[in-house]
Image (cartoon, rainbow, N blue to C red; front, side, top):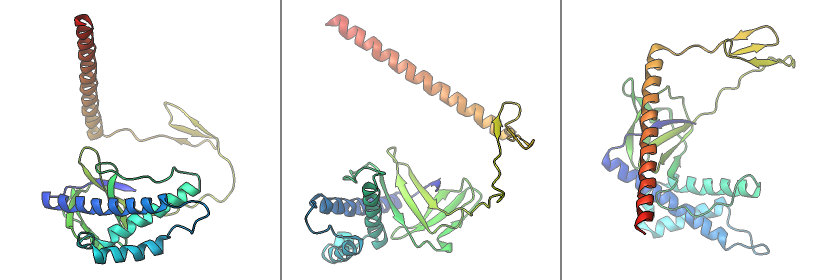
Amino acid sequence: MSRYRLQPSPAQEAALLEHCRHARYVWNLAVEQYAHWQRGRAAAPGFAEQCRQLTEARAACEWLAAGSIIVQQQALKDFHQAMANFFGKTHRRPTWRRRGRNEGFRIVAVKPGDVRRLSRKVGEVKIPKVGWVRFRWSRPVEQAKSFRVTRDAAGRWHVAFAVIPQPIPGPGTGAAVGVDRGVTVSAALSTGELLTVPPLSEAEKRRLVRLQRTLARAQAWVEAARQNQDRDREVEGAGG
């Protein structure tokens, strides 16, 4: 997954939030259906049956019908994958989704023309029922079959493109190679080959210094806040 920062307009953000509400609503309906299932009863509805029920719900509910069928069906798809992970004992049982937590939705069947570059640092992605939404082109974007739009707790939007990487052919000899990590030499192989990580460029060094200063200021602010809290507790204790 390659994640990029989305830059939606206020109107687009409202449409994205509506997609999130639809995905959350459909997910919670699926959770409710499976919550009533118990051993010995008839099997809970599968993905195909729930898609049929979704079609009936869209016909009966204008609010749901106004949304994207792709967003809603993929919410069901994500739920069934979560249930498969649960039965495979690799994840916990899927639970209710709450507003403001894990907001997002997935889009599939992405076409080559659905992602385009506008300038050196700006690109656009086409989202159903929303239109072209700009994002920060921080690194090259490879052709993807699907992408996921998410909103974090701070209200920032991101888009993550799912790309299947090209397979890397192995040496095919079956021979084992020992690796020794070091400081002067990044890695020394048992074959005698020495590997060295390239140094930071001047621009990267300047950015690293800025980030370190920002981190130091943040740590100082946290420490000052903690001291103020300790001082307030002491004052309250003395007053009591």
